[in-house]
Image 1 (cartoon, helix red, strand yellow):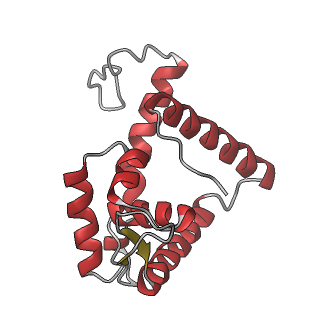
Image 2 (cartoon, helix red, strand yellow):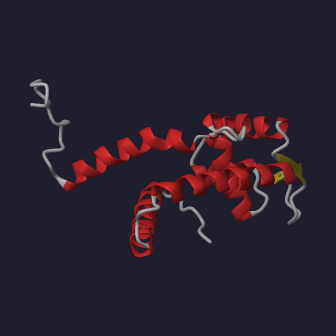
Image 3 (cartoon, helix red, strand yellow):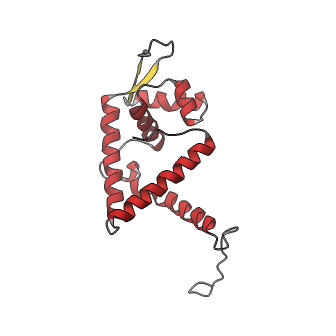
Length: 165
């Protein structure tokens, strides 16, 4: 029962198990992502989630072809063609010949794409700093380590590892 006397059922499968708690907390984390959504910020951030992620990957790996992006993300080429076409129209990426001499053209982050990615990343980081302000540096480092481990295990299971600095 809650404070008003209404019956409150626990989510199916949780039964106070730690995995159920992780499920519940990751659901809430997704709910709170609006705090860092560029569309809701006053600075006029313009990167949507897919552009932010694609630009981050291209920034880390350098120029990538549609085939390489397909392999990296496990998405079909038509989805990536739509996403990269939108990024081209917005001036976030450029199509260039393969620097290694291959046949496929590659996408390279443009100066504008790098500027917007850096601005969005800075705002995301500032938002996280506000949330983590009362945490000790050790707690933040421990949390970061667990998040990396969690993401790495997901990437291992999906077969799409993400490069890390």
